[in-house]
Amino acid sequence: MAHLTLEYSANLRAGGDFPGLCRKLAAALAAQRDGDRAVFPVGGIRVRALACEDYCIADGAPDAGFVHANLKMGAGRSAAVRTAAGDALFAVLKQHFAAQFAAQGLALSLELNEFREAGTWKHNNLHARLRKG
Image (tube, rainbow, N blue to C red; front, side):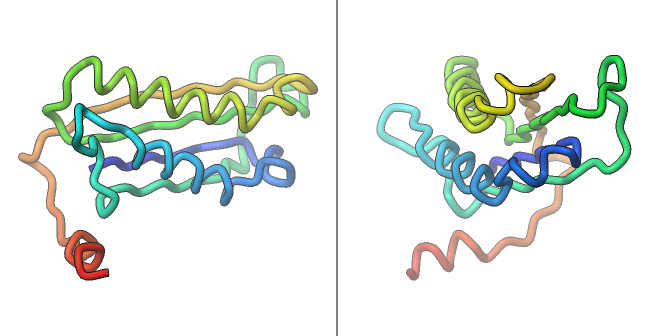
């Protein structure tokens, strides 16, 4: 399971290509390996981007923007695997926003969180559908 949620300042929407970014980040998650096996099964990958209409960044300059990514994953992966996933995702974010970073104030951040199975409920037919297809 890998759920990646992006929150971003709405002033980045026009030039941010968030649908494309979501696809790139999903591909980066799917590409993660621990030895010969996938770290995140494709059926468990979710990437979504939510625009924040109301925000104040730093000194309130109107061209300042932010993107904060929060990756939630099931517990049990090694520190090395978690770090590799974080590095891969953050590299995609930095590359995707390189032009904006050079032209305006921009804060990019990524947070990784693990959660335990206790206290979560799931009903998912995506894994089975992917095995059939």
